[in-house]
Image (cartoon, rainbow, N blue to C red; front, side, top):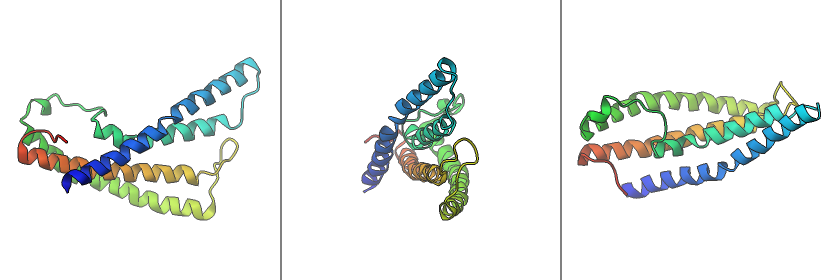
Length: 170
C-alpha cells in the first residue's frame, strides 16, 4: 500500500512536470518574437512581459515537486553526505515535519484565500496589457499543493530509509 501511495504521488508530479515542460518552447518563442519586434522593427509588444512572466512561473512552480522527487534541487550536503543513512533520514524527517510542512502549509493556506479572492473579483494585472491573473495565482497554488504532496512521498521514503538503513527503491 505504501508503494502505491509513493508511486501515485510521484507519477502525478512527473506527468504534470512533463506536460508543462512544453512551456519552455512557448517561452523561447515568445521572447524571440519580442526581441525581433523590439530591435528589428522598433515595435515592442504590450503582451510579451506578462506572457513571459506567466509561462516561466507556470513551468517553474509546476515542476518543483518533480525536481524534489529526483533530488535535482540545490543541496549543500558536505556534512550530511558523510553520515550514516539512518542519521540522514532522522535529520530529513525532522526538517520535513518541522520546517517544510509548517512553512509550505502556511503558504498554501494564505494562497488559498488569495486565489479565492482573485477569482471572486476576476483580478487583472496592473501592468502591460492587463490580462487576468487569477489563473496565474491558481497554478501557483496548484504547484504548492503538488510540492506538499511530494513532501508526503519524500517523508514516507525517509521513514523507510530510517527503518531499512538504505534509500527507498521501487
